[in-house]
Amino acid sequence: MKVRQLSIFLENKVGRLAGVAKILGEAGVNIRALSVADTNDFGILRLIVDDIESAEKNLREHNVVCRINNVTVVAVDNRPGGLARVLAVLNASDVNVEYMYAVAEPNSERPLMVFRFSEGERAVAALQAGGLDILAEKQLFG
Amino acid sequence: MISDLYLNDFVDRKALEALQLQRMQETLERVYQNVSFYRESFQRAGVKPSDLKKLSDLAKFPFTMKTDLRDHYPYGLLAVPMKDVVRIHASSGTTGKPTVVCYTRNDLELWAETVSRVFSMGGVTEQDIVLVSYGYGLFTGGLGAHYGAERLGCSVLPMGGGATEKQLLLIKDFGVTVICCTPSFFIHIMEKAEKTGFDLKKANLRVGFFGAEPWTDEMRQRIESGAGIVARDIFGLSEIIGPGVSSDCQCCAGLHVFEDHYYPEIIDPDTGEVKAPGEEGELVFTTISKTGMPLIRYRTRDISRLWYDKCGCGRTLVRMDKVKRRSDDMLIIRGVNLFPSQIESVLLSVKGTEPHYQLVVTREKAMDDLEIRVEVSPLVFSDEIRALEALRTEIQSKIKQLIGLSAKVTLVEPGQIERSTGKAKRVLDLRKK
Image 1 (cartoon, chains in turn blue, brown):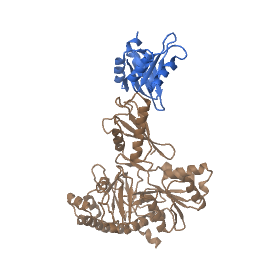
Image 2 (cartoon, helix red, strand yellow):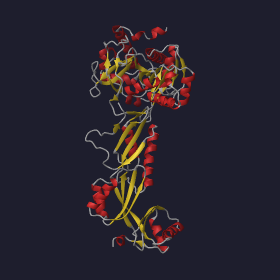
Image 3 (tube, chains in turn orange, red):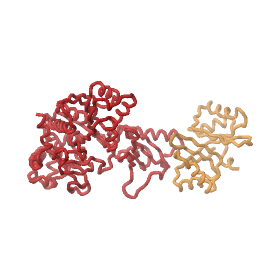
Image 4 (cartoon, one colour):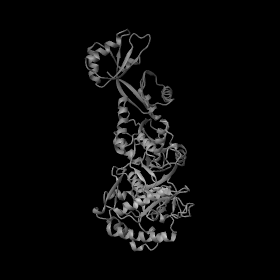
């Protein structure tokens, strides 16, 4: 089960991130999860939003480089050891994690981990076999 | 005799022109007989060597371009059999093929003679100890300066480039009075001297002959005041002979061209029309004494002006303006020739990179820096940092491989690089003119 994620290329300059947030805000797009990975010169902003098509379209109109790819969202137990359990399952199956980030809401019973795997199918199979819950896109936007 | 060496610097212009005409006629005849490229080129233009009856008739003859040298690489423009060639030099090529220059014994002697005249003009005598810090090898700088200094009777130290500390040691211990190197390398030496607490002003160093790359009047001031020496500008290009085509005198009012051997013209780069003295245009040289690989009306792509009025030093040799820019888009970065189109070919070869790029050239201290700004296209945009970094590294290493320069590669958002309706502004040269 895949969830779509929007990745955005940003130069490491003041205002770039704010600019993107403004475009999305004006387009009426709501952000569910967010992560920024950065190097000296540039960064990649990764977002899970409620209207990905609209987000992509609006960003492209503003000449922002972005692309949509698939990620896996896993529900994690909200207690110490919750994350370790997920990672242990992945390790045991020798699945490679490209990157990951968390969506945590303080009152949520089950925070969410967003994963990008190099072998998505195999990873999902391993997680499900390990008794973990994978969320579908519509489950994120109750 | 040493004094005969620079007789022609002061000769009466009428006598000089008569000498030039005779040499030019001999050279045109020589290439017409011996070099098929020139025979065909003259025939296509409908001219014969005998059509040169006065110097201005040279305008009837076709130009030679750098591409002609490349098309006839390596020995297509040779006017003598290989057994008469005693030296072969090659300069850095822009497309991987170097520019080849072949010298006969006559050519080597004439080269040494003109470089020694450069040194004389700078007040150098046989008493001087000359440090040659230009690169030795296929590049013409080192050996050109070397044989010129030796011809004058100086004591020559064939050090070559690099090894800054060793250079300083020689200057200090060996009583060096004259140095020959690139201006940026000398500034590097000056900085090293300052760092190690060595006052160059107290050394025996008196004069420096700097060239092989463009340098500003500000750099000259900096060198002269920082090291307490006279800084002279030596101009040349391998295709014509190497260093020693022209150099400045104490008047610093332009560079005297050794026109008894290298006949200069200024042309309009678009129409090819010969310009009048004092008018700006592209420098063209015809070698009138070389026998190995004579060049007829070779277009240098350098922009300059010619001045025939008498110089304060008494020399009657024409003066050319220091070259500040080129008529094409070629850049010289740390002594390496680079065309923006070469960068373009690298970018296109790297999967998916859109050819919207810009070269930014800066000079922080003495060394040139090159930054290549490349727009990231939606196609090439990978969601992974690793992949983008790999892309950057790939571009960087391909450029290093192609031209030997380490450039910084910066990935930028689309639309960050100015589009233009006419010729794209590919280059932002922020080095001070």
